[in-house]
View (cartoon, rainbow, N blue to C red):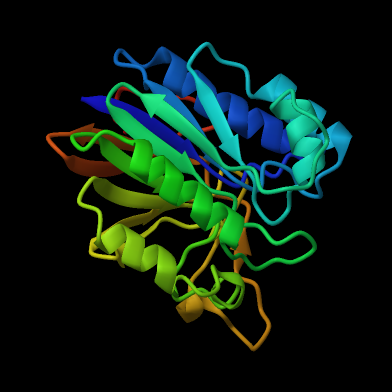
Length: 259
């Protein structure tokens, strides 16, 4: 079994609150009897993409578990590259391939600089095609990005989801090695099918956003900062993806039922 942990939408903003929530989640993962083989952070690492916010993220995302990040719409490609990827401050798409045992994870950059919405441009599709062509026939593949590719009943995120996802859906439907798609962006846990595979949308570490049924009036953002942070654990075994969400209590673990 390969075990992946997925965090999303950490929104480092120089305030200690979100950093403390990330620390709680990483502490939980570090203490697990069976620790994850890798950690994925699926975008919106920072609130506004500044170098100072990425420096806070760099200091906070500290663990000896391999950890990989991809950008979200609140991120800045150049600053993310420079601070977290030790690369040049370039503005092109950040696409990465991660090998975790026999599992290949394609980390796709779905961001549009200056926009809340997402898309996968020709450069990213060409990169994905080359990766799949080079991946062994008996491998398993997960695709990860920030923007969900289908409506998720969120008045906040649906208008700024992944645009024109049809090409990606054809790729996924046509490749039996792809077990599922992992995204963030919604600040809520969600699952559905995309290209006949599991689509798993991870909740935010920073806050929760309610669904369309929680909107009180047009334009309302049903955001909630009260819930504890959550992480999704993805188990990959026997060509099956199993995803389990775990809330990490900021007040610590209570092992005996309160009376």
